[in-house]
Image (tube, rainbow, N blue to C red; front, side, top):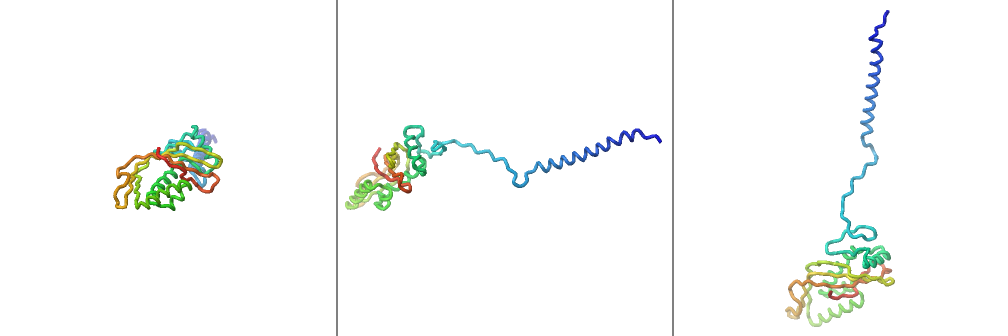
Amino acid sequence: MQTNSLQSLGSFPIALVLFAGVAIFLILRLRSVLGKRVGFERQSPPPAPAFTPGPVIEGQAEPTAPGRPVPDPASPLGERLMQIVQRTTDFDPPKFLDQVETAFRAIVTAFAAGDRPTLQTLLTDHVYATFEGAITAREQANERHRTEIKSILSTSIEEAELLGDQAAIIVRFVSDQVNLTLDASGNPADGTEAVVELTDLWTFERNLKAPGPGWRLAAARSG
């Protein structure tokens, strides 16, 4: 019996096509599984947001608030501040400016109100003695003092010094204030109701071996 040549030639291609179809099906199935994230697979981190660096303190970029410039660490003043940074882990110039600005408001308000306990915590002994003497004289004259800080325009570090364990930093405050002294009858004895721009140079001192922040007002003068 003669074999059909078409059947013998067509049997091989048909089997090949069937095997190829099965292989393609398996490949597609594997790709569908491998293309999915399963369980604890590591994901690519999202892109970091762009930012504008501020002055560099201890190798880190710190943002600064408007009106509170921080000296360049490479400048002579910045190098003296870095000496203090290296001596104590809790000193950071931008945070220091925040702290002394808060202290400035508290001291000015406490002096006007005759709040001796608050002043004792924020002033060195000899400065407290001066402030306390002025408050006592005012009380003996039956006078009252009214001070209102309308705004602090700028707070900046003017000088810094480290002598042994004692650090001293001079800060310039520029503020808009109302200062008025009233006599026993409530009439203005000194000062004015008008808003006046004042510049003050305050020196804050701290013993770096003492626990806590410990920055206290050691001297004050007009700038």
